[in-house]
Length: 327
Image (cartoon, rainbow, N blue to C red; front, side):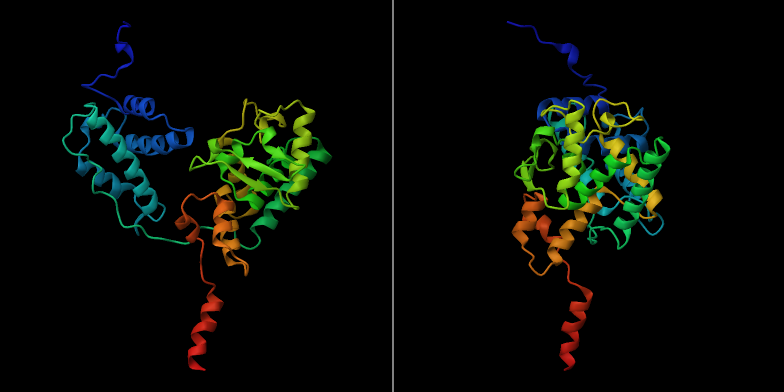
């Protein structure tokens, strides 16, 4: 009979937050995306507490003090939104429930119980008129610099990042889904691609069409990738393969977010992958031929209530409806 390996077990009398996360991930077997949703609030909570604090040191009052410190308020308009706070609470409450059930945390009550707040629902942030043309202009200028002056621009390589922008604009996929697209997921002949389950928030695979305006961009990327030996199982959207500046094995979230931060600076407006997603879904639900279930399919929502958040009434339509009362 094999001996029990006690070397990997945490110190039950003094368990740390990293140890608690390790044990939780070991038992739950979560996707990298879901793991990140636990790691972020734990990291922010530890920053508030100090690295020397342990899970067992936390009381409900400490949690409430943290809530007051980071939650958006008139005195802190750039603080955490109520929706994000409640997400933090759900993940940390689950982590503490696990730790208490396994006797890793010597507490009788979960300090994250009953600390959620009423959420304020705002419209999803979308791209404003002119944002995309300005982004195109910034990328075109960087492309001109790279071609004429033979040197990397601020948005290097501009041709690659232009394809990334167009892909987000025409598909509305999440950043993590883009990173998980393999060369073999792109079917140019049938003009469709696979958004894999690995990159999806809900863990479901989605097959989406490659529409006419997007086709030449993906054709260019696939052709360039094939020319340098990218295989079907390799990451397709990988700036490191085409850049003189990037040196990672695979493209990661940080590289994409840094690009969009630079693009926002040079275009003069905040542009993010998620704003492309919100813009597409909002546009689809405003169109005369809007179809709730088709929009749900495009966005890959498992719950149609997520799609309903993009249903907004146009102000002018409401104006006409109200004015007919006086006729």
